[in-house]
Image 1 (cartoon, rainbow, N blue to C red):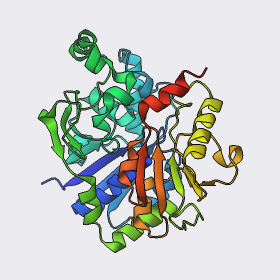
Image 2: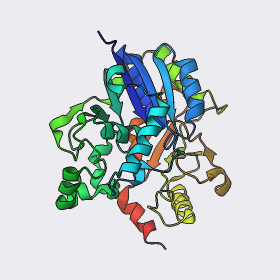
Image 3: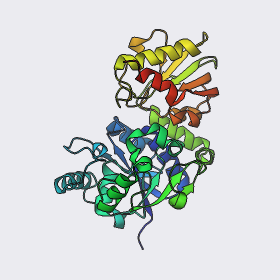
Length: 343
């Protein structure tokens, strides 16, 4: 009988956090693959995971993006034969030609447009999709305009499904057999494959030693200390300039400067950059405390040292997963639109 073993495919630090919590609480042997596209420090993090989480995680694979084909930009193009072969060869090299169906009883993917998700679709392997960030499937139409065709262009959507043009995300792939979300109410995808597993329940399932191990995993590579008096504000940034949702780097800087001026009332200003945010906020703003960007914000829930009066974001759903604040402010897409017009 095949040994039960799970594989989790992660393309963000938040997804690594959720995976480590699931590994701690499932009692099933777990392997993890880190995609460098979204986990830039994957090589270092893989070492910290193995050093700190060895009781729960068996192997950690790193899938780099040093190949000619980027699956993240292929969503509107056919998978021609050459592209398929490149991705297939790349992923199989990462896993040393493992047989996914024989070696893993379950495969979990957070983003099925990444290298591993694309590979699973090419190979017609079944997988379970996990919501890529907290409650993100409730705001696909508003926050993910690249996928508007799913909702607004039924002809294009049917053609893509019929002819297998690219991988359609959010559970629409026929090889995605189930979808797990934090909360089913209000999701914008059909509920037929969807089950609910609340993240707050997952956090509560951890014991203090497991929290300590996860905290240490993410902070092994930093000497940053987190101490605050609860009077400041915390800004969670997003890579708007990198993803072209804002036209210029200076536009994004101006937006966050305006946010600081509007909401700061004399306390400390903490900035937690998104892992893909390229702006050095410590250089462009005075008197701000910039937190390490390659750490999921939710990990601070495992420490009583960090407290703020307000947490503020434009559209990031990560704000819903933190408990170190007294008040949450989500400014929304309309606020962002004002800066999109300032060209």
